[in-house]
Image: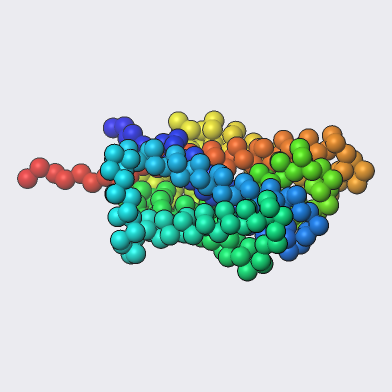
Length: 298
């Protein structure tokens, strides 16, 4: 028996962009704290955040075809505060308001109050966690109904948000990119943490008391999605960036690390993180299999 995924590329894009937006805002707040001199990189994070989340929300609305035909249905999402989806709408709405205000203030060269920045970072964190919790409420899917998933999506969101800011900075502001050593070292740790979380998620899912969980994991590591999992996600998204950044940060001469050639190596590394972040969400969606019950005829 075959199973068609209930969510596909559009929802994967939404989950990816929502997490990336939250991570980009968190990055800008982190930069304001540790690298306040990197004003252009701070602005990059503040602009990326609302733009990508807005794109993700538009994709989500187009995927919800019934909602587009009857827009009042979207209002019903705010009527049940016992629902993860309702809280997601609250977090996304509040994050969009705060991030747009912060971006407008920054682009008009006005001072952004630090409490507003901090509120945006907290909301960005909530948005990133929500993308994992949204899947976790589907209790019949062992790969989704796992406490590891929101943590994994949070780490991946911060990692992709930082990667997006760094990629733009390499192209537009390489002089600032050279000065944000604390950010780069923190970002270096995230794919390693992500790798541990993925391994834990797969181990727990495979050893749960369900055939569906085992089959979901096997689809990833040795089945239909083996190439995307091992090459695009593990190698391109995690191991490759970790190896490149280990060399650049800890073994290459400082003169080379600040050279334009090294910048493009970092660009490839961070681009790989972005690819891996999207592939992770797509694979989690399409590889998940539901628990099925067979009821014998009486």
